[in-house]
Length: 289
Image 1 (spheres, one colour):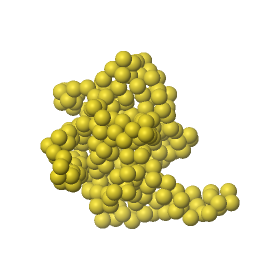
Image 2 (cartoon, one colour):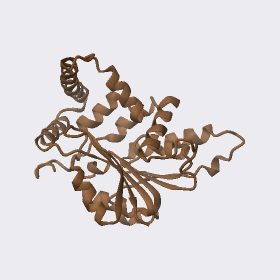
Image 3 (cartoon, one colour):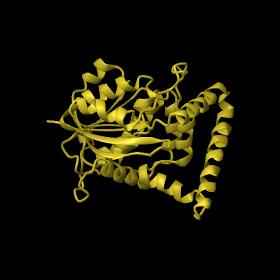
């Protein structure tokens, strides 16, 4: 967990980053997001709409890309985000999607609601009802109250439903160093921040290149960047901006996530960890019926 003196009141402008990313969302990125969601939730690859008839809650929808992926897989979707710009991004992507629906279909039948709402607003979240899938990738650790956010998300899962979350891995000292880097980002003027991100990214990309070279591999990062895009349809630059600037910032070990949810009737169905590295561990649980 972060040091007790962490500047938890500082909040990164995630929505401004997503607004810039939204300009890069194209058919290829959408398809990559759909594939990523299929793989994470272990959905039937032969079924074109395996979420048909399911309610899908996207907590911290950001650009709206994964809400769109869920819609494309047949779900009815409720998207929410506390960030005004992210809320607007998701609305924009929804409206673009509805406008693109074939004329022989009824756009009014597209069940996609978007809310400007915090996951920590428990009464408002409760009013949304329960969902077959509750999805929150890389969001709940940015609330400043991660454990409460996870608990609130879990409470929205219907019996037999799925909870899919991604939470920053606890690296111990490494996580504390990243917290200081993130705090540094917020201490400098906004016009200097892109240079700061480029410097941090350049330092680590150089380290990665040296490590690849030592293993006898091509030191260039092009393969890693392609894998990142293929995995979640993400942009490398916007991902770095999000990572370097992202506050609030909390972390957790896999057991710190799995054991409390297990006590509440959740069974772990899928797990992808980053080992001892930095980044998000991905968890998919099913709630006992």
